[in-house]
Image: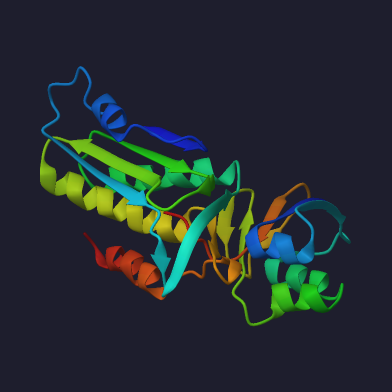
Length: 152
Length: 85
């Protein structure tokens, strides 16, 4: 398992290749990359600043991966999340899951991303023409996460 | 008992605190009681901790609800609902 919080960008291709390096039992790697958009709720976004809770963030992400590993038969997973100041089009997050088959890897990757959105202690602040403001949590993210409560 | 408090995001900015050590009477303490106690510090504290805005709490890096018990030496954090990813 790999969990990293960093200000610098990441090379998704390299990171994903590490998940199946020297392994002949991996048949599938599923990955998700989150990017900064230049538009949110109708406002033009010029910049995004991400804050987190050092110490808790790493534990929370490791717990999310472990929950995914308990629910699905997957080989390995990694989460890299950036913090600090980001611009539109910048990469924010990478979640990648490897396993023998695609079905379990797809499900585990989506589960981890839904949990990250609602559990991991990150907060976004947007800069728009109207000034800076904290991004509000979305009920659609809670709903996405709640889907997993009823089973796979 | 002594606990360590952390505030994040909007709370940190508005309260103008990121961390503090707090000395509490040795009586049973929950997250809700702690919020009520801090809210007594004044307007902005009440607004931030007991107002309309949702506040989430963590004890020793684990998300907890209002009824969670706070113990001596705990690290307690208050923050808005998370918005990462």
